Length: 566
Image 1 (cartoon, helix red, strand yellow):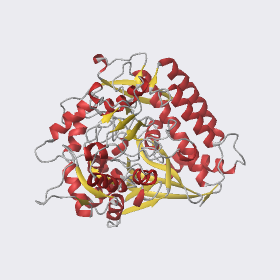
Image 2 (spheres, rainbow, N blue to C red):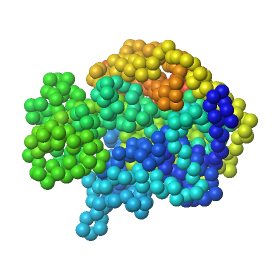
Image 3 (tube, rainbow, N blue to C red):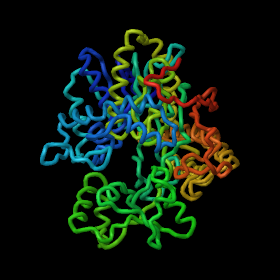
Image 4 (tube, rainbow, N blue to C red):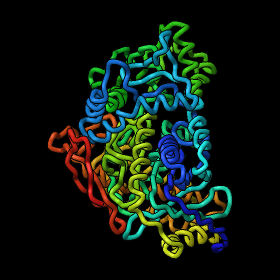
């Protein structure tokens, strides 16, 4: 069919998975294994073979219960690192599955390194070494084994379809050809990535997409949930990664691989001044520079040639730019320390607690809608195995819930999606935009950087600045209504910007609401620069009539299971 220039594709599914990354792939695999009759559709903006955070590979499973340790210990570690703002039930439920999903990955073909006794080689108390350059193609190949899974690549989902009964599907468009997709689903799992590109990055201009988190993760899953009124949590727990300067390669590979310590420009080790949590480490390099002792480095001078070779090989698995930089510059790590820097802030539930407010079984606060992976809040330190575990939990919950979830008829589906599909077509028929999408994106990033605690502000902000940021983000959001697209690629950029702006609105409201500084490496509230133990609660929010309403929820401590009402 034609819909004002866009062909309209209507699909039906029992279970719709939005996002073909780690959590989404494993959720579909889990559901297909348990119910071969289930109609499962996976929608992916890119291609599942190389999409999501694992697109380039990874060299370790960073969440694993190694011999001699327990799931309870992992819970205590996460609680300490996140300064108490976690959901015990969520962390425990995923920790109990870490090892099982790792072993399942090995059966699929992942190479997990072993010692002479056949035991996995650990890289610390909680992780094991792998050869993971092909981890995503391995997951994608497993999807193809199940005839009841339909994977549709290159579809950008923009909105969930919902009425008084709950969520009943989604709407989006092809990024390659002129077609809109409307999908009816009895259950919808959001398993997209977190949000990058909200703030001005370290590397501007041509290299602006050289950042820690994938630049194609735009917070779409958060945004589409917020727009239908799903409750969100902990957006103020931003993530600032400590990374190798310019390449933005992970520093843990060096710190854990060769035991390199962080030192300032005058050779002092400084980590003990700030603590060894993730936030503390991020705070250290920033504060040392502020006080005139920067830049900071990982002390690699003096490592052996064997260790140097190991580092070069390790980075080829996940961040080859770092190995290439050593080779091209002639500054090998054994002769020159590696300079480090903080990234711009991200919203990512796989490392911090940002995301949907879910119950223990990964149901969101809206009937028919589930969340797993980077978009599921309350459970930091997920990494690969945690995302897979949450995907499996959500899939099992969906299988249990399906009988009670209605299937929407074609008439209702058309009614719910009509405004959005007409909006797509309208953008394609307008001759010219008043504004350029990249100009608006740059304005958004500059605003967030200056007024909402970005790199140039040394991650500091106050209420007056946040109010300015809030007003300017609202202005930019209004300006997107006139953006037009000459092709589907331009259409993609428009809706990525719209999603980022929606996430910015939620983030700013959360930053305003937490009147303390709990994670100083991720952001300092200059009005409240100290931690306040009276603020030990979750900052949650719901979007109502275009405005973000804040809700404070008590900590969920010591509970095996938590349930909320929709």
